[in-house]
Image (cartoon, rainbow, N blue to C red):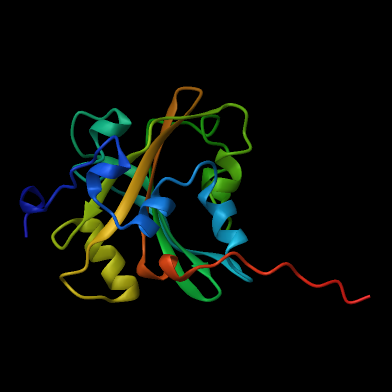
Length: 193
């Protein structure tokens, strides 16, 4: 399949435009750090890094990060797991023109959450959230399916946001997996004194 024939997501500025069920809408519109909310909804939270490498950005990402057309970027993909089950697929791209001073910790994240650096760095500016439905035919759908399986008729709800630090741009896309709807706030740990 040629890249020109791949489905692009219709990114919307309002979560209501993607017509997500109410429980999913709540996750899509999480204020602040999604990582912090996932931690609060699990006994064991883990970032499982799938890869971090140079790759071509997706067609519907280029303009968002200031590129006239798809080109090579630094790409990172992770699964955010709650109690051993994948809850969110994370996909991040950074233009190769960004410098180490723009995103000093990006190359050394390993299994740490990107959110732990973005939300606690006073130099980072968060852009507007955008929302979309990801269906069969979109490259992120294929990547999610390769990692967790699933059926062709599944619809995933996603959000993305551009972050700026100095002159560097970074685009984070979070694809919410069905497991996220089963999460409940974790019970407080009992003090056994």
